Length: 97
Image (tube, rainbow, N blue to C red; front, side):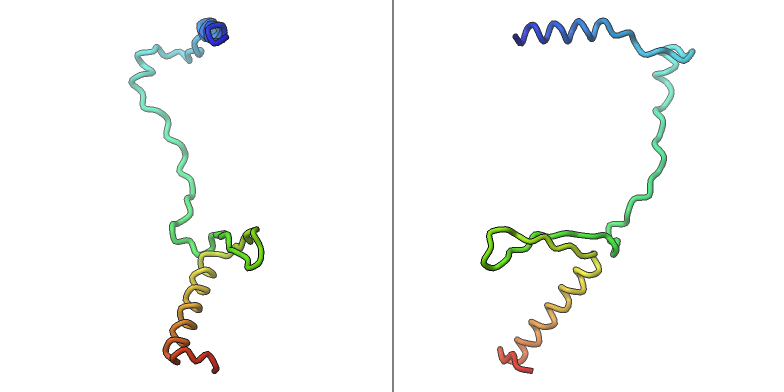
């Protein structure tokens, strides 16, 4: 089976004509540099508006929940959480305000 398929692929590859030349010989084509793709707008690595999603565990469920926020929102949430933990630790574990 493999040999039959291999033979058919080889026969088709041999039967395909080479790409049509545009008036240039193969020697000319090998000397010209390949065309450069147009430069595209790549998002910055620290783009604050890029949406990032995370899977979070839900208490009492085996199905995680997908939460999506922008990078700026994730940074703000992380900073707020750190400030709250610092406040609790500074209060000696006393969480009353």
